[in-house]
Amino acid sequence: MTDRSVLTNASPKAQHLYRTLLDALRPLGSFQEELKKTSVHLVRGSAFVGVQLRLEYLIVTIKSEKPIKSARIAKVEQVSKNRWHSEVRVSTDADFDQELLTWLKGAFTLCA
Image 1 (tube, rainbow, N blue to C red):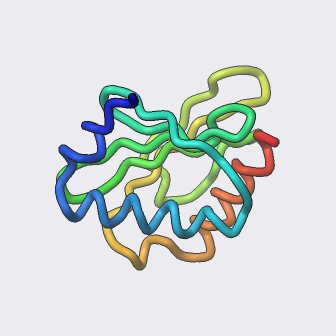
Image 2: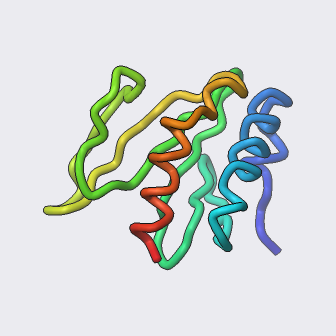
């Protein structure tokens, strides 16, 4: 049995934002949730998104082939020659806009 405490111990707002993220990703195709102690990895072949649930927001780490250039990106890290992790803070439903969905779709496609 998987320990779901990373989700069940999260604030109602963080849980809502996480469910909204999952709902935004479902039309792309199937993926699995890998629950960790402090985060969740969304996996399709390999992890394409990491999610840290904070009290009032999510930190969403998106895998990409190139760094994502946007004022919304809080942190960018090169993890290998052609792989980057970019962190974006998601605080409201409005943050699930076309720009974020494009980044998520790119990560999903990358991990086929």
